[in-house]
Length: 406
Image (cartoon, rainbow, N blue to C red; front, side, top):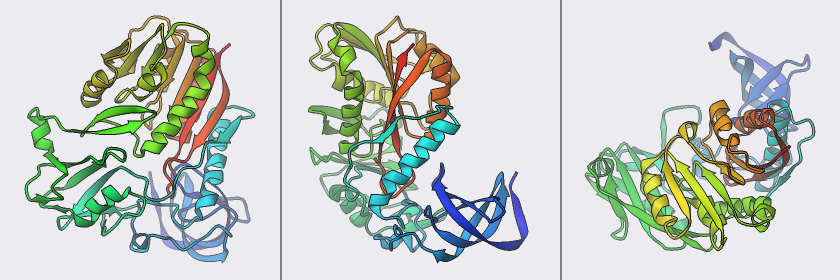
């Protein structure tokens, strides 16, 4: 239950580190914790305590000692309240180390990994990278939610999006739509707009495939193609795929580096859990004679794409939730669950296949910690984690962790 303060209280705090959600854990002189949005580790701040929910939460009143990493946000929409990039005030070179610290803390505190072996992955381009963007609409124009609000900020440009996508943000007229998913293929140039509830009144460049959610519900199919890891992938309007192709390629490279010894030991089998359009099974099993796989996914659109993308490999695509998966013993599991993580039941199901190597791709540090603890309880020890900053200027990050059976 949230306890809003009757009378605002202003306190002085020192910001220590980022925590899940992007706020900075900060302390008063007496040790009391205040979570402060927009604060950077190391700063001394005057903050107004605006609510209590577990820890106090604070709003910056005055910066007493600014971090050397504090910058003026490059995007003008931040000053208008856009919540899309909640770390826009932090210099881009300072963000990956701060996220590394956040992940280490979560793996230590939540996962109980006493001495986490964690490193940063390769640096990725911080501007013009995003190839998928979900926007709300305001007066028929693209908009994003305000920070901690349902209100909208109208966009004329979004500087973290790929130029082919930013053009749609700038030129798009979306009629009576309430929400639009814009998707482009960086390598192919193909562009798509999925419009909810329908595409009435939408005006976009003539090359853009425009489809209403109502049309998909009636059986229409729509997709684009992207090229990642030397392969061409079909990605339908409602399918999951990483929001940047270089990020998808980086994930594949890290997972490949963590599994190469398993593949080189001879023929075997793997499970690609939460496979999406088949990214890991398709990338890892390409050219692997004697290897077979099971690709499991619950989303109907992604299942259809995976069957197309993996049809030349010895891979069985299974449309099911992981909790209901029935699989034989395998040598390798690669799991890429949603933000909530694997959870107890999925861990039980996947470890029952007794893989010697388990690679977990997590998109939330707390979930990574919870899943780590569950995997250890099933006989797996963490070896290393790699943090990939796929989402610059936000608190979001990807963590790839290798586990070996002991």
